[in-house]
Length: 112
Image 1: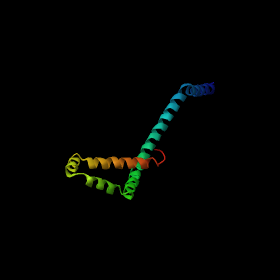
Image 2 (image 1 turned 60 degrees about the vertical axis):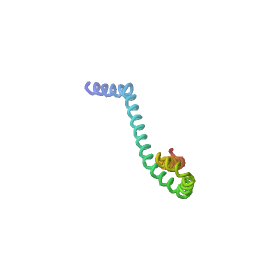
Image 3 (image 1 turned 90 degrees about the vertical axis):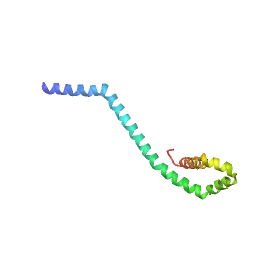
Image 4 (image 1 turned 60 degrees about the horizontal axis):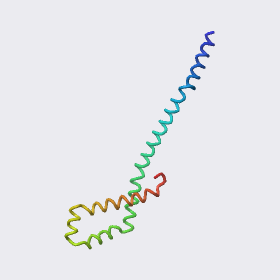
């Protein structure tokens, strides 16, 4: 009789898991999988951005963008140039241009 009670308890625990434990198991499993996917994506981005930045620097060097910017900077009169330098406009233009080229390169990497 003890064997039958043990089997009955075992089957009750299985049906209890199928009734209520299954939802918790799959919820925990899906949360774990989403967490791992997010961690993987962040690691992918952390490796892809320096790669894209290196390509963007080479692209800007190949296109001689700094030459065009220096020519445009030289075309300004001295008062305008000094005010722009005080306001750090050249650094801002450089930052915006570098960001735009890096974003352009990132579009060619699958996953972005």
